[in-house]
View 1 (cartoon, each protein chain N blue to C red):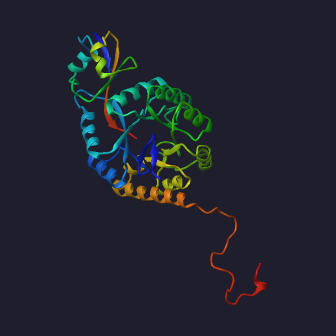
View 2: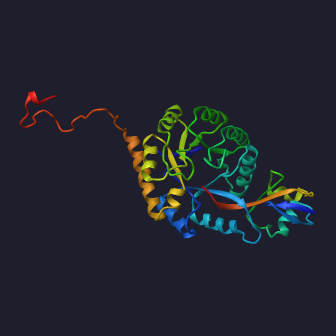
View 3: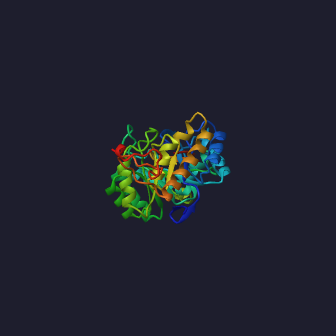
Length: 65
Length: 263
């Protein structure tokens, strides 16, 4: 299915957000996630199913003012 | 007296942003020179290839300072709330520098969305530090929502224009004597930071003025000195300005004094 990850189209077979994060190499990374504009806690990623056209955000610490 | 942020005490009254510094080493040195105990950070989309955030986090951990994550770039309360929730998990802190931005030209806080987001986040247990203006009614609503720290701008972010509404900021200080007030944004020179501190503001949050200075480390030190000097001046009690001169040297006993020369 096609979803959006950080604004870019991605084809994935991942059934859950946790699977998607693992596929992208973020399983152990310091990241936070949201799906369709709502925060998803790391503990809930395995319980969060993905559907076509979902918009996923995967963010990490960055410089800020 | 120390800086109080939600019951935690800090010696330094300078909060430093981590963006735009010339290099990671320059950032580390600037933080050390500033004596800042709190630095601001953000969260951004992580690329699976570059993984820039992982390296940045290692650097922040080495600094040994508290982090204050922001919601920079958010345009709505909903975006700001979701960003704050991600920040709390990512950085392991309930502190959030809440920004809801109205437009690109001024980067002015969008006060209606700000109040809405602050109310939601306080109810969720966040300790909200809202980036606001000197507007009293917005400040009252934010305080009513449970914010015990307010961060009014001095002037637009990155503009280096200093305190463009000094009277408004003075009124805000007088109106909220017990609230921790931190000047956030628009400071370009150490003298401007000292002016804010002389008005009785509790702290100053800086980024561009240090990061983009010719010598960021020296500028960080200059701001640290200015902020400390301004605070000491405020605590010491400034004399009131007056229209006409008042001799500091005693008039009585002036040599060659003649009464008919007095105008």
